[in-house]
Length: 364
Image (cartoon, rainbow, N blue to C red; front, side, top):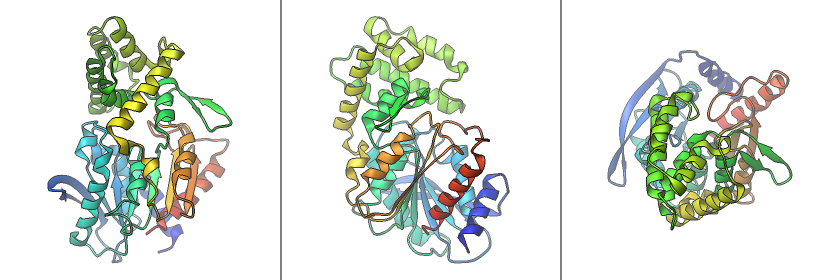
């Protein structure tokens, strides 16, 4: 099947065509721990099938996230099998990067037993937090040599720059500065995981717990983190704190919409970064890409409110020299929500995105 046909099948299904797919629930073994997974595949058609392994991000719905399901169905409609393992820790909003490789290994080990004939090596896809983790994992022992390549949607490379953006809305490509209102969800999760590990921080553990409560509530309700329906919960949680603890809570909950002081935020960014790297060194996925050898395709939304698009080039730069890397920045999709269609640049954006999509589909 040609790239053009596969791309057309993907786009048609993404736009709402009800492709004839079989959807099966499976259980994988991850180092002795059972984890759920979903397999999407065409009911009829040519065999053998290319296989994709897809990692979700830090979301409460996990593999059942509506946009992820939509993506998996569109990918399967290209006459491919799509295996989506769940990472229970990420569903619980625990930043556990060390679970990436075992999860991918579990999926790879399961491929020979799937109800299909696989065509060659599978390819990996990672979204958001799972994007740089998937790229780094492709070069890890136990995975390297077993995958055809990796696709990273909306990933980060520089943790400190990403945390700064999430708290302030500022990001830079090294020559130009940008500002965009950040989605609070990202900073709630990062701070919720690592505030308790910052030495000497007043109410750090309690504020961390409150932030994760907020993030879980947003995820469980399936609303944006800045949705006003969360305001009553923010107010109730805020009443738990006073003095420095209240300032800390407000700085993180409200971000640049609040009363931030630059020096205080600089210190918070630095301390959160140190705590994250000390507790979870693998969160610095860019530093673990030395073994990557299969092609990498990086796609990022220009108006991404969770992880800024300027991280895409940094992620590409972290891939070892000599490895095939492509980067596409587009207004045709976002991270927190769909971007408005760019009417002035629509045709050019569409052509660039379709080319990136066709190149991605050629991995398998």
